[in-house]
Length: 525
Image (cartoon, rainbow, N blue to C red; front, side, top):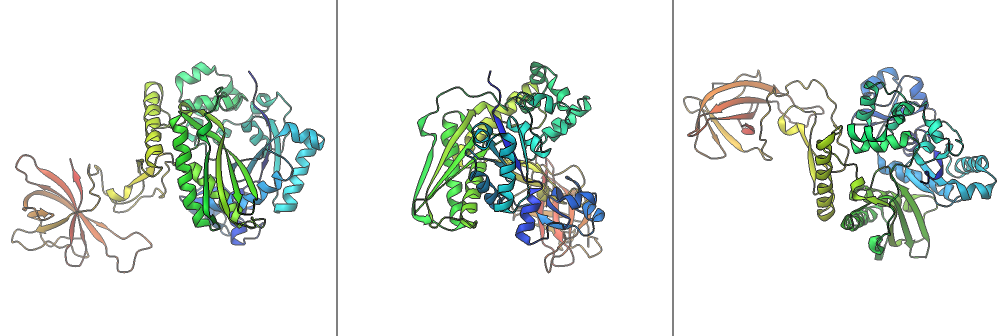
């Protein structure tokens, strides 16, 4: 069996910080960090010297480095500003593949022979990127993309056939590269006493497949210095390429974004119809003046419709906004799948860490959801995620299938959070309720969080009133900061209503200190 291809990887350290600093005009030596969901996703070397690290909360990072410059995570900005780096590499070597903004890969064989060896090629590309893009970078060479990326982080040239030996002493945490989301797998392996890639690679593949999820089998192959997945030895159908021609040339970013979404959906649906998924995508743009721009994207996981659209949009933005942008608008876009895998290679699971029959069921469900997504579009399939917040409606967030399932709200005490158990049903539009006391007056809640009188009857959405058998509360809920002008505190009350067949428990909400406006926030089953 042939081994993985020998690749040169050019890595721009801390690229999200470099791109954010370039966009915001931050001096290069200023301590800075990029945050997503209030956690550090990347930080500069100066910030690391002050104790800032990946995954750290914003408050902790700023306490360790008071002068820290804060940037928000923006993948579009990172990809757009990386285009000059990719173009500089492409000027000297063919077959450039953008792994992700900050990392490009180049086949070594042809270029190294032309420029007089691998070391000469590495030095040439470093000088070229610094001269034409003004960016510092490191280069690594090894067999296979995973080993080459780790070699680039260490500025190492790994001899042919020595990838496994190079990887063996490295930490098992290297499996959790940005975008791979293998944090839970790494934690599990550490608890099992597997601290290095070599210790993990020493396990038999059948044991890994029987104990862990499919993604762990992929990680095991990487730890052994093998290709991420075996090659798919089958003739590709001729109709997988998607081409779009425009009567009115694309000159603006918003036009490119609209076109990217449509092309991504068509491309993904065509692959899904043949039971395939793309792991290496070539995007070709032709301008009205006959100029042609080509860029290849290599992907760690098979592309979804949304991920395809993102890469098309990023590439168009880069072409239309860089210094060497084309002299005319784009009149034709073509998507070519340069590498595909079987649909079963999609790493889609409803839960991380699923094993055995649960993993198989999750995988089948994942393929079904991807199929529906291919038919109806990337925004047609959602999964719920429990997030931070005080009320039941605030805590449930719908995440498009294929997107990272990570909470976006910082987990904190949330004063006023509803105690367990939570309502089983949360109306998308809370219906109005009329809450009366024993003499028929509307029940109010004072600024001190006290009800004017105990509730006696509740009428929901104009229906006949029902007698209150019991109640609890009120619990005050203050507006989240920053609060909107005129926002008032609210209070929640749990009540049990008498019913003909069965009693009903509901969660009510009312605005404090004004005319009572009650709504039903949730229903307990």
